[in-house]
Length: 124
Image (tube, rainbow, N blue to C red; front, side, top):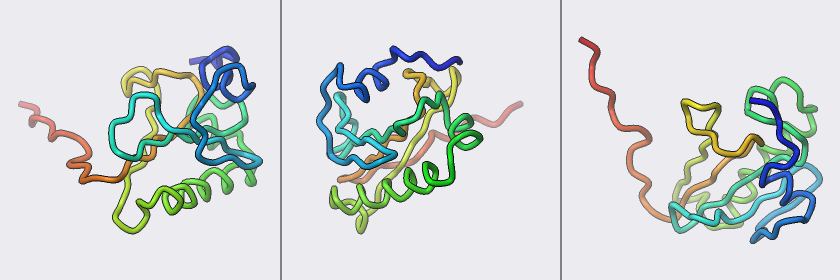
């Protein structure tokens, strides 16, 4: 999947589309998901043009990498879910149903989130 500079997150970063911002620093913008799946559902995006976690991990600077992952913890505290627990999720590629070709992480919390994945049926 190639990076599309007109994807929705790139447009949010350029200020062309609004977002309900909860956090911003040099490397990260975080905002509430428009279709929340939990009481707390925040989307974190790096400010660089990275299509996936593979692209981000291979090409982001050390400062971008550290800043992004530190932001996850800061936002969890800010949103009041750090103590009770939260989940982070990043979809990569078609099989994982990545919808926007800009690396992003969802942070979910505020309720019991259940199992991560349904158990697969054993192969016969």
